[in-house]
Length: 175
Image 1 (cartoon, rainbow, N blue to C red):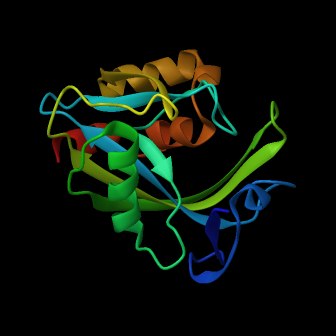
Image 2 (cartoon, rainbow, N blue to C red):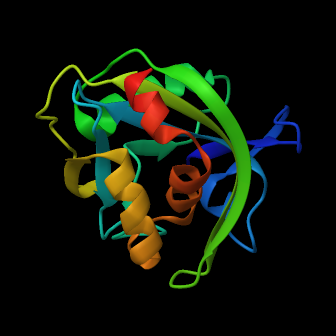
């Protein structure tokens, strides 16, 4: 049984809870991360979440997301998850933190996360995605993604829409 780290509103670890329970009944505030990986052209590696995902399935999102295991650091967890989902590892650097709540009306589950945002550079243009996690992937320019999330918001995860509109993602690509 997989567990997530429960946090207080300031992001301080206060306990653990079974993963699915933490996403039920409106969600329990827990620790998470969102990874943004860019290629040398400044394009962001996007993924369409696999149809088999337990929530927000089939939607486009940032490179990868996940939860640190109890006792695991955020950067360590993000680098581990990137390798699991895309088959490569790169050094990741924290750039932001945010709290958000989003309900998946198709499943009745919710995200309520204190999330760390980390960025990195891809060592390859041809990742090896895990089909159980990723239904499709593509490289896209951040400004094109911003426009697309405004025109077609329901194609994207709610946390990714918020980040792409509120954060300097295009600057991260060149930073």
